[in-house]
Length: 194
Ligand code: GRF
Image 1 (cartoon, protein in one colour):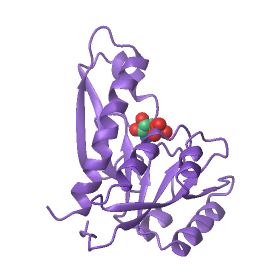
Image 2 (cartoon, helix red, strand yellow; image 1 turned 90 degrees about the vertical axis):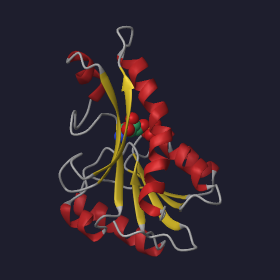
Image 3 (cartoon, helix red, strand yellow; image 1 turned 180 degrees about the horizontal axis):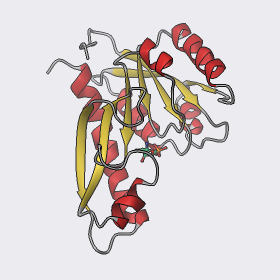
């Protein structure tokens, strides 16, 4: 993707559906002077998403969008994004699949974090499937979003070891810790001229 950084931070929206711990972490980084994005909008597909509280706490505009009708939902989001002059989107535990039409409008400017070593274990229940397959390693991936689920170009990955004492919960915890390091790093990698 074209390097976007100038002197100003890139106005970013984070899309969530639930807990929002990656959102919380990205807000922490975005509050640092040298981090290339500011978070100006949080979109949730779920009005009860716990993560919405992090937007509120940090005085970031937040909107819950009803996805019963995808086209209407996306039009509403596109309106909000243009109103807030958003130029970059981070998906963080966002459980809806965006249409090709929407993605095209933000081509190369939507990224996602996924809790597996893609291309392995796209979709849901990644930790359970990795353990059932007796994988020795798992991890997390930040990738560009395309219209094919969890299939866009990989930006960065972090690996964790699966030990014999691991449970789905412990593996999730270990990987989440890595996610909090990886997502900010991957954002820096694509947005700052190193
Ligand atoms: C994370 O594991 C992320 O990789 C996946 O969904 C989970 C979201 O967690 N896409 P949180 O809502 O950021 O706490």
